[in-house]
Image (cartoon, rainbow over all chains, first blue to last red; front, side, top):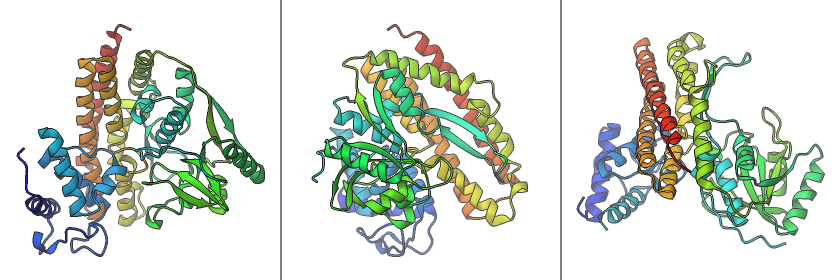
Length: 95
Length: 338
């Protein structure tokens, strides 16, 4: 997969989450990059079950793996942390 | 007292992660998945004890068995302690720390108050490593926490002497002696053979592949066991918890087993094991589909008979896939020349 610009990647990840979880009335622009994904400080208000669905969707779209739940917990902290993880994995795959 | 220089690492599962960290400290490199595989950690059991309203399932061998199997196969000697006297338990721990010995300790997870409150549940078989004491606080390496942390002596005491099922009773251990050399490929093969035996050959209908089939057949009866829809929903969502949380590393330890096979394939330069690792990873992905399905129908209270039939079919598919996989794995390891 070709290198994706960071802002584009974050936008794509937000859209992926919205589509996967079928979240209504929220656009990627409404989702902050650095707010915790889980809990009240995020307009999407996700829970741990959503977390596993996001893991599966990110794995499928970007052909990366997040098998270890304890590590995945930290990757799923925010849009920024997911984007960091995906871009590093894609870099490794391309090198 | 200062604390011991100890390399802290996060891990998927507390028993294997703690053991891997302690062995590393003592000069032996065995990764967490390698420990899990050599100790034939993978398992399935579906059971209902008389006091239980709902059945439960396990996806790994019993707590403590992994260390025992490693002791037996690798030849490591562990010094083990168990206590009735809480005061003596603390004195012995402090003495070991003063001698520069990091110690694995069994605790009730609930009292590990460096972790967020929402994350902590009562679970008597959590393992942490104690690496020092500063004033009234113990210095802790907990593989579920990202860095070395501290826990006050009273919380540790409560954790070590919590009551209930599988009460820790102050249990602690450290490796006393480690063999200078051993034949790792041979141990890998032994671990695989035993795992295949457990999954395929134990003549009990609740164990291994037969246990997965029992789970598949019985899950359609779950609505009849529940008090009400909330109770049923709670129990169905627990399928997700048992497969994905509680230190399984995801998909009921299937990802960890796949990683063990991959690491074994790399070590032994064996393409066949690498292919089998990929197959186990796929099995894990499909278990994860079950986790999400169960969580979703539970959360949405979408708990009609058709949903349980769907869930049952998904579980039966896993039974078929695991039966095929472990048969193939067993036949394959028999061809490995050591």
